[in-house]
Amino acid sequence: MKTYSIVLAGSLVAIAAMALMAGSISGKQAEKEAINTSPVVKETGFESKNEEWARYFPRQYDSWKKTKNSDTIDDMLAKKPQLAILWAGYGFAKDYNAPRGHYYALQDNINTLRTGAPTGPDTGPMPTACWTCKSPDVPRVMAEEGENEFFTGSWARLGDQIVNSIGCADCHDSKTATLKITRPHLLRGLEASGTKLADITHQEMRSLVCAQCHVEYYFKPTDYTDAAGQAKNAKVVTLPWAEGLSGEEMEVYYDGYGFSDWTHKISKTPMLKAQHPGYELYKTGIHARRGVACADCHMPYRREGAVKYSDHNVGNPLDNIAVTCLTCHRESEEEFKTVVKQKFARKEQLEKLAMDNLGKAHLEAGKAWESGAGEAEMEEVLQLIRSGQWLWDYAIASHGSFYHAPEETLRLLSVANERALQARLKLVAVLAGHGIFGYEAPDFSSKEKAQQLAGVPLADLVNEKMTFKATLVKEWEETALKEGRLHPDARKGMSDYSSYKNK
Ligand code: HEC
Ligand code: HEC
Ligand code: HEC
Ligand code: HEC
Image (cartoon, rainbow, N blue to C red):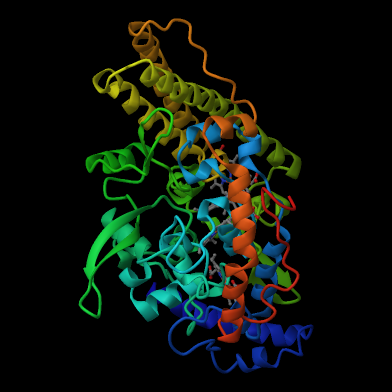
């Protein structure tokens, strides 16, 4: 990493010099000053306000701000109603959308029905850990409070602190502007999986900054004593990497100490929820093996006159095939779009089979309990459901896996489907033992039907959320503006869509 700092410091000066020659941005006085001095955004700590970085790095800032254009809501529960059955009893059955631009990370965290409708700093269903991957205010608050202290209390406690969406200080050092891992959980995860931090290369950093968030994690309960000598418990974001990064290895890790995220409402299975193991799956694909980094595809270089810079509008690489894929490949744009479409269609087909079978397994298990089945009879069934659903979720939760690692994604989906089918076969026998023959699970082919079966009180959740947004969320924003943590322009012109209002 050391060598890298030197390279970047040098290239910043070069970039600034080229910028001057280009002339097109001659008004940018601060950038000119950068010729003789490497610009320092902030001498110590973290500068969370993206606007403060803009005067030295206008191109990176302007392109970062374009993530604002990716604001369409893609309601996954409407598209794949099986999801509400698979997650019955868990927050994701309430609301789950495909990812949007980095500019909206914080808004989506506040808008999702999963974070509930707190009425004050100590209420609501979620811990502070839910902010971890949404904002450069996170490393700032960790530095100010301490990491365990950050991970203590309810999500709402930090509502007026975590106010800037994913930005510069998530991936860059505020003093040197070099790439930086700002989340301690990634450093610990890498060490647990056997990586020597000192050996990390510049090219690896171009993926690891993304791996701070696009990874699998869980909240590990951690006891500590605070500054006042009080015994406290923190819920610390932790990567389950000690056994390895594959789906099966993480399953061993979680099984190893009987961890479960929740108990399924219908089948009573102790479940695991995959978050978004995007980095882990990418590592199994051909591009990673050939050293192609996340930034190579998602942040291609751009030219503006004589200036070369990284496009910070992190989005779909297929929107810029000429500067992403075709910098290495010789095929035509058409060919590439066809290849990616095929990979997606193959994944969708296997995913649907797995979800249908897992959904039916949950409902049939529910029927078995209802008919008087006992724990011993159900044990194997529940283990198959837990394992199958974990592997299915691990395969698809990161959205891009069908492209990043197509073979591994399809393999996992096949194994997941097989486990679900095994569970269903055993359930036929369990049900027969209790006098039930030919049972057919109820229809869950729409979001409404599936949420009803899962017992989601949608109308109430939406009403509470709208009140929360009109009251506490407004207060958070006002406080952050007044106390200087949020730039007055940061949210100008920001749309406000959700799965339940203004779609
Ligand atoms: C601080 C956490 C964080 C970091 C660092 C991060 N991401 Fe993200 N990323 C997110 C979150 C959260 C979302 C979803 C935002 C939403 O839906 O509101 C997201 C969304 C995305 C999307 C979807 C964008 C769209 O418009 O559909 C892509 C692609 C993506 N990230 C790639 C990357 C890449 C590549 C990197 C590294 C260069 C990276 N991310 C670094 C948290 C992060
Ligand atoms: C999700 C992580 C991420 C975020 C957020 C991010 N950057 Fe970057 N940035 C990168 C990566 C990766 C590179 C490529 C670095 C390299 O390989 O030299 C980069 C490169 C740069 C460079 C070096 C010149 C160049 O363009 O390649 C500057 C300067 C920079 N970013 C500034 C910013 C500013 C300003 C912001 C906020 C508006 C920002 N970055 C937000 C990941 C990020
Ligand atoms: C070889 C190029 C390539 C590399 C390397 C790559 N991606 Fe992707 N990524 C893609 C393509 C292509 C898609 C599919 C875009 C689509 O069809 O929506 C995608 C999709 C995604 C998505 C889903 C976006 C959405 O809106 O559904 C995320 C998130 C993402 N990538 C993050 C990452 C991260 C993080 C890394 C590194 C760990 C990475 N990508 C490495 C090409 C790449
Ligand atoms: C930095 C260079 C680089 C970039 C950028 C890149 N690739 Fe690749 N790609 C490779 C290499 C190297 C291989 C492996 C070739 C081999 O070993 O045969 C590969 C393999 C592939 C393969 C065949 C393997 C498979 O997974 O089926 C496809 C398809 C592919 N790339 C598509 C894309 C697409 C689409 C993009 C843009 C989103 C892209 N590549 C961007 C370097 C790159």
